[in-house]
Length: 230
Image 1: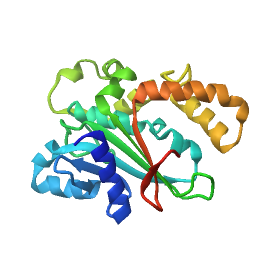
Image 2: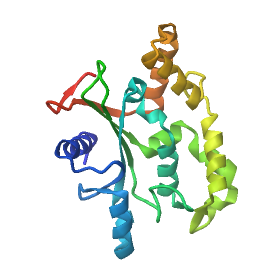
Image 3: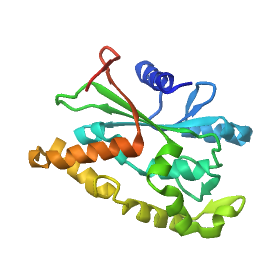
Image 4: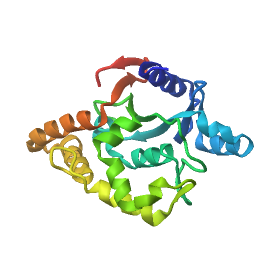
C-alpha cells in the first residue's frame, strides 16, 4: 500500500464507523484492528506482531492548533520507534506485548467536533517512523539513556528509562529554536487564542514541522468525504 491508499483506508473506516477510538493497528492485509483486538490475537498467534505496518491513532478535538499540527503529540513517535527497534516497555501503553519489527507508519487521525470555521473536518497525517526518528536525533537520545542495552536481545525498557528518554527528547529544540512544548504553546496561542502577533513564529514552526515530520496530509469534509484544503 502507498500513502494515499493507507489514508483513504483510514478515512473509509471513519465513514463506516468501523474504527475504534484511540489506539489501532494497520496490518499488511489492509485490516485495521483495535489494540485490544491485537493483544487478544497475539495470545493465539504471536506472529501477528510481524504483520503490523502502521499505528493508527483516532482522536477528536475542539482545538484548531491540534488540527494544524497533530504530530506535536510526540509520545507515539517514541513508542513506535522503540517497538520497531525490538524493545518492549514494561507495564505501559498500547504497543505491548511484543516488538513490531515491520512497523513503518504512524497515522494520526483527528476529527473536529466544535463550531468553528473548521468544523466537520477529518485530518489525517501519515509519517514514516524511520524518517522522523532520523530527523529528531532519536537514536542518539535512546543510546544516551540505554547505552549497551541496545545490543542485547529481549530488550525490556523500564518505565524510568522511558521517562528519561522522553525528558531528553522533549528538550530538543527542533522547531525554529523551540522545544516541543513551547512550539505547541505558540501555535495554540496563535490559532486558539487569536494571538496574531505570533504569526512569524508560527510560520517558522510550520516550516520546521514539515521538515521534521515530512507528513503526508489529507483533510476531508465529513459531510461529503471529499478532500478539502482545510
